[in-house]
Length: 256
Image (tube, rainbow, N blue to C red; front, side):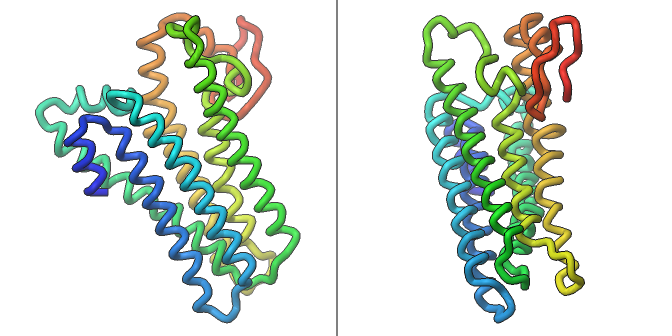
């Protein structure tokens, strides 16, 4: 992640940190998954499927982030942080980049535990694939809806509250998290021969915490409230923050 920090310092665009992080996690995950071929107790099909799904995730999200980052001066989530860092912004962003590297550890552990499971290929693995593909499709749909909304001139001073964004203020984050639930499904066995497989849930737990408490919702919504004021507060009141849920009436608080 030091390379990501150097790029951010040279360009002033902190979006490149997320781009680098995505491809780094994807690359590490693929290597650890394929390394499971060193064991004679693993399912070759599961190894290949896990590696392929990780590659699909990294390519889709990484290319989307590249497209987005090239079209903005800076990521609004990080811009406020950088202003608050003052003259120590260089060191502050270096620490942020290294913190993201640490956060990636539970994620790649989850991938590795999925690929190294000694269980034969099961219907449970098919369910994991379905969950993952739903997550990829859902996140792609949310990103596509947001791009289409922003492309319309009449929406220049509005925020997206259509489609999936009517049911969740951050449907892209929800589907990103959902995808990480697939790896415990690959890893967990009900027998006692792979108890460590349960630790694969650490990836989904870490991602949920990161998105809802750290670098996802909090800084982004602080930016949105400052930009859109009361209209965004009303949107928050009627719309679930994370999990998709039918919008509440204007006088009710949305589900979270």
